[in-house]
Length: 112
Length: 110
Image (tube, each protein chain N blue to C red):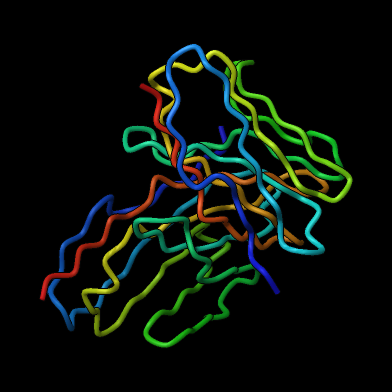
């Protein structure tokens, strides 16, 4: 069965901490992995990863894909209260146009 | 370039009624997907349309249906509403492997 598993399910840190969120997947014909940030509204796109070992970076956020380990991590350095959100990992896999499978998300709470 | 738009943003209905939600994708995007998000179940895939054809379908009852028009705009219909249908309904348009979400329609069923 195709699946995407995120860990931890929830995380509480203090401002300034660095966090690492994990996503592992088991799918047929992997195409890409996407990270989204969701606050009290629709998810916003963070990164799309297709190649193993190439880090994508945007400000304090970075992500990398390991196709050998079938996983990805999302790092957030110097966390701020505005980083509090649910972080979703989504895998695009399968047929000619692909299908999407969502992880359950990691709820990050950053305390002042 | 304008983002994904959804209308209405908020909706209140009563059990047994039916509802139609609308989604306009980003210009040039031909794929539109619908999702239901509830606190208990998280984000669940409803269906995906591409070039006016349903390409993928999630595990939802037949009360949930959709369609896509030639301009790629999509509608989702839910008939015989139940209390459990109260949720945020998200639409996303995609080009290649990247998906962009609309703001969602918050449906409350009383």
